[in-house]
Image (tube, rainbow, N blue to C red; front, side):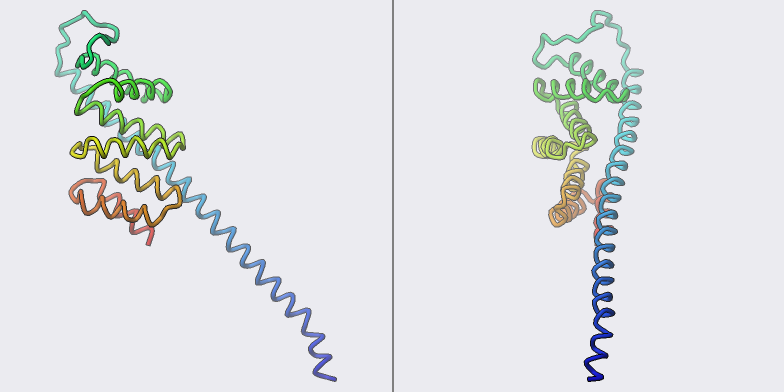
Length: 211
């Protein structure tokens, strides 16, 4: 009888303990989700910072090229599209796209980069255009489109100096999409294939953070 009474007294405490455990588990799950959201937000912010850094480097290169070029010909003040591979038109369209990008006019920058990528054949400006298209799409949170541009760069221009970073960006997109194993494989590929490239260091850091 005493055992039965003790059991009745203890039952509410057991139930309460179970409620507390369930609440704790729910709280931990919420914390875990908040951590994942914060991680994704941080990744997007870092992508924006990297875009600014890469863009500033690109502008410096363009300024240097402009200073080295005498531009003695004053015949073109607007784009010339009459040639299929008119090198002057390529430079003008690309410079205009970079200017738009610097002014955060992503729509017109994207239009110009797309025009270059679809209508010209240049071993330097076209892969760069694909790279910037991938970056813009990433900032717009269009992960599928961004991955397509980076994949196109990596597949069509495997020896271009932006290709290692394009592979790393594909890993970033996989990670943001929740495909962690695929992201790890891509980061490992970057480290093994481009050990001397700065993209390898970035991939290694991200890989270590995922462990």
